[in-house]
Image (tube, rainbow, N blue to C red; front, side):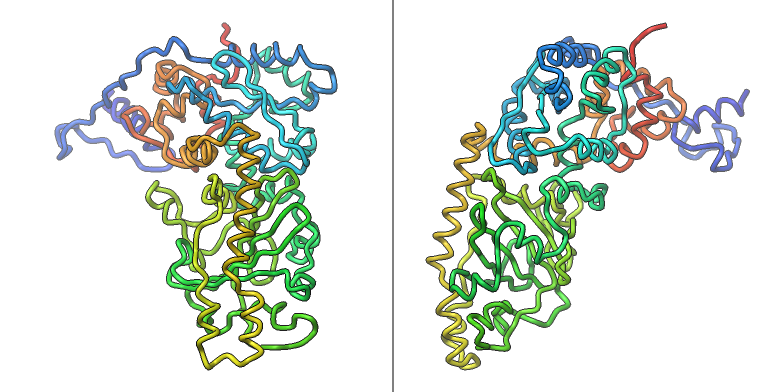
Length: 488
């Protein structure tokens, strides 16, 4: 009997008897006293909880108002987890979803999602309106971090009408996955697929109607260089702005901490030094990495990261740039592709700076007359500021048309959805992603075998990280009986 008691306690504490030897001792011999079961959580009922039955019933009713073809393109982004946690006004969530879905669109028109159901926390997306194909949706289904497939009768009807395995997904999971905003998603390639961005740098510029050398030959390019960047710490960086088919493309030239090169020694991109077929300088800055911000066809902003070889990447090296805001939130300080929108999503998306290279080149004897001429032509703070104001103005107009011009809505996608999803979650948040009342979730988790070990920390007021939640979500769904009908 004593062995059975100790074994049960070991399971409660997350110690697996299959992976670790269990030593049977008299509890009185344990220095810290006998092991006790953690006290139950305070889990009051939430009478407004939107569970699986209500959610799927609302989706099914909505699908029955659509034509057969529209049903095949209908998908649903779910924000009911926020509603169930107690957030009843979801206007900022909807604004964030509108900004997010239009930021991965290849279409020329901005489209708003349709809020349906109790609490207005279910958002219908016509994927065809954003240039997302059904094949691309299937790729998204396979990469989502919360792996579940509805097994309810209503859920199967929804699957049939939409011809999709996962016709509804959580908005936070969808955007973290598609924008590649976490280390768990950096290799899925979805963002570049969705915005149809080529892997090679030259092909990327061509796809948005930019010939870099021709822009410099026509003296239409503008440059700026400075130190004390907010993310490129202890290094210099320069910025290049070129006109594109849909507006502008802004490109950075960055080095790593180990590099000895500096913009104050070699200030020019290669194309500037050979403008109009005349070589005027050999002082070419050899970049280690780049970030690109450009206008999508609908006026929203697109992003790209690449290394020295010019091949698209999904995370920037920490010795090139670092996200100081992430560390304050307990997150990985790496700058992932999805973090670009987090920094540049406000009404004033262009971070302010002052060009330091123009005066430096003009006043230094290390630069000859031809190099000073290059500086006079391409380093122009007034022109730079004018172009960035145009970028901001057009982006502000797009936000207003999406109903996201309120300061609280500007970064709702990053602040209210992606960041909380990437942070440690408590039992209430996890219950939200199971569409269960907290009380039901805790009761079923306590009674489970495997999940009570993996997620046992939630039972004593602790938290769980996204990596653990993602890796074990399918097991958790099975153990607590989520996403299926309640029946004998």
